[in-house]
Length: 292
Length: 260
Image (cartoon, rainbow over the protein chains, first blue to last red):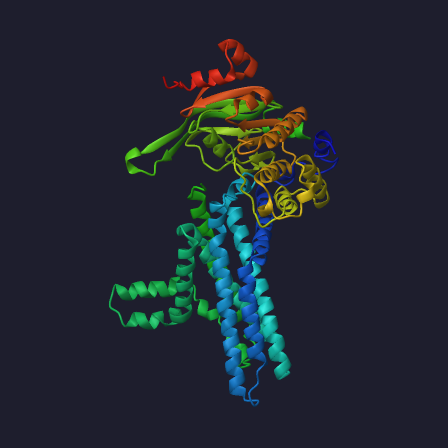
């Protein structure tokens, strides 16, 4: 085909939406555009994650350990089986945190470093769309990873025990996924604040693990201090997202039965609020930051 | 349809209008204070023109493009594309941008990259595939459409850039040194494409250091120096007015003095 023929075929076909930006106006149009752009950018994040080799290395390693430990049954001893299940679930938690934090931390810095952000925002894309897209992509990718991990674990564990607590699994996965949403949003905020992805990785990981381990004890710790330290520690206790609330591995390990639906929904709402707060802060900071 | 849209936007002829544009940067070194990159730039580009934007390094060409593309907010003044302020992202719905260097997702193939950008422009799926075929034929990358971009040569990457700039069938193309770093054949191909686009009635705004290339393809040129517009006009008019070549005019305007 000659150049001119090729250019001729670039002309919009009759009836085609050649000016798609016009088709919707007002805030509905803006929301619609934000959704379309965020989904497109999110799709890119997922594609990148699944084309990287480090993801597969971690995935295969965790899956392998899960399969081996989950299938071992020493003398039908329930305590040992529970202990092995606990190790497997701990591995799933650790892997999911590593995947979520490392994937998210490099998103915006790598866009800026490789300068792919320029052709992107030269399109009708705002920085808010970029942040939302990156969040959606990382969150979806984490969700997919969780489904695969828990599916492995559930199938192995279920075939040994002949017991399928689907309700508990659903609640555990959703709570875990929403907790990762908070962590991902926090990491995105970190990627705007800190210059290097490595420092963001380290700081976010320490903060997350810190919240998981000592978050619930901060109020007791505050009682041991005098003012103003006591008020400061109390403020931190009430302000930080209590990620430990989402750690319901015991539901599966000890077969404790499902959580009340209202409590489960309230926990998801709690995570959604913190995620939104972190995302708003990220968007506001990113809008003020020079892209070059 | 395009004409109606232009009328609604308030301007039929001036596709791109820059009014008293000033851009200041805070210098990284405290002793330098504020650096003025653009000082009250006024420019207007009409529909169907190929406009060359010239100037030495640091003249303010890239800053102007950065403002037009929404990378940098203007300190004062404004710029309009199709009558819409560049502060509004929708102003970029009908433009295509080719950066000086290739900045694309290297893990994607050419067709995946084009599909991604088509999604952003909300081009319907069936039309997307047609357009991908067309632009890849135009830039002669059909044979490599499924290969990851990281395996492409520099010339091929520049052509992918041109393909992505054309995916939305833009009415205005902003090209930042489109032939930079290309071999003579690559340059010729890019020049040919620009000329074909001109024949199709597209408006092209491009910066370049290649004065011969500018002379060949441009209807009008503007020459910048130290953040100010020094001259603008039709190439033939400038040449006859100054009784000199475009290169000599450029050197005179930027007050270049050859070493004795």
